[in-house]
Image: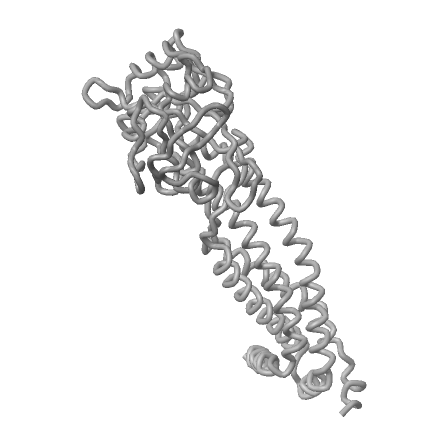
Length: 395
């Protein structure tokens, strides 16, 4: 009990004197806050991108592509294969119509807003069942395009990030011209980066004949996936692979999300070294200016462990303040910020919003405390080893 009382007393004394050393303490706080801002902001990019990709899928939908294809861009399906896919058991039906959309996927160049640099924007040719297959689809501005015409609807994310995608404008791609008649949303999924058009019109514009790249199928339920997949794989008339939509988009996001996280942790580690040195200098200064107080306390019978704990507690308190400030600033500055980046699986743009989640804020605070612990360790040991006689002579 005596050890605990001593430790609490010395720790409270250290914490109460922090305002008297605000200048040197501020160096550690600002350094650690800067590291947390960078770490949380970079990781929020990966979090936002992953969320946009993963929200794009549903367990009750299946994506059918040519066997061996790793993305929609490299897939190809003939009209006969599409007809057979729409006959598979497990597919949800409205009357005699199977809820499946055979789709075509091309890339067109549209500059980003604020720049003249062309970006790869995906244009998706869909069939009339597309809106029923994606139950989250809704028109939020204008109207749905008419099939059989050069009309298009654009995703909300595409409208925000790329030039000329407002209702009433015309998109020019090569010799083709497409009239924007509506804006849609799909609960923040990757589809909001796309431009939708009648698949038959897109086939003619890009000389694709009567071919498609994928079929998106809405199943009777998520449990119907195995029935749907097994029937298609066993059918010798089609050469396809069948994946849950959620699995497909999770795999699409993995490479870029991993790269962003590695970059974020690398930058934070390098900056963290500087922040740790700042904390060490701050705590060495604190120990130096309070050497007589520390020696007096030890002469009065306070043990060295209490001194070490008190110095570490001060360092952790400064780190917690820096981590808290950094987390708040990162949340205010970056959470919800809209941008777009390249999906390297399809070489097309994906619009998404940065997401500063509680998990990322907790990660930033934990990293700040680790820096504070390392930064305070050596000064704490030095404080405990101060020669009592020489320190008292300075009184």
